[in-house]
Image (cartoon, rainbow, N blue to C red; front, side):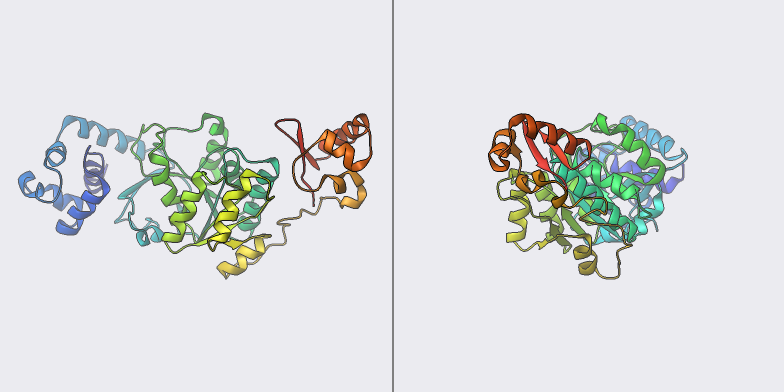
Length: 361
């Protein structure tokens, strides 16, 4: 391991020596090697005394050695503030990470990107929107950034991988920890064709307070942030607020006025986020990107509602069989049979609570 990288790791892996203190030391003395060459009593004037003396502990030395071994493996990298590969957009945010652990295609950090985020418990339509919009953005040359969470994040990553823009997953854990475990296969796919990224030390487990910090990097890496579906208490709104504070564009897809998962997006739109109905709405706003022709909101295979009258009666809000029977003037058996055919055709999704939702436009 290069001495320069060892010094960066020594500072960042010292317990109690947070990013703000490290940046203060960098400002005062220069590169980490120059910092660590100073006496510990002198350094203690600019950072917590106990932390400064802990830089020379056996615990820190072991953590540095482990991180160095990890970084030496193929496809692994530790990117510091002084590296050319450090993403320039992160230098614009208020609290840039001192270093980043990366696994995968490091060159993606230099490409224009868009954050796509949303609920971890989204509707089937929300997931379809996230994947199709992300694919359209990827086809247009944007790298999709999200947080590897369930539902919307996972769908956005899959959409990004379907195009040349690929995807970056920013983790709220150590880069060697897959969370949630259900996304392990997706994480493996991202390693092969995209990039995993984390500012947290190796082995850092999932902890609630780490994810808001992770969110500032998701939007910090991107030119804008699209929220697909979100409740009012969703962590996606934290990401959107961080994006606005960082001067990034904020976009939101509207939904049903009856859906709790639309209320967060509607609140963002009321607060000034740009309402999005198609990928072109975002691409035009960002400038310099053009749709590749991939259908963005209404996929080419979607059938017209005139082909099946039941779809017209369904509308776009979730509905149960009894209400649909009343609207369509059909028996429960007729409606259930038709719903099954529509579900198999990918035009209707089954929701919890015996509800059904139309997926086609």
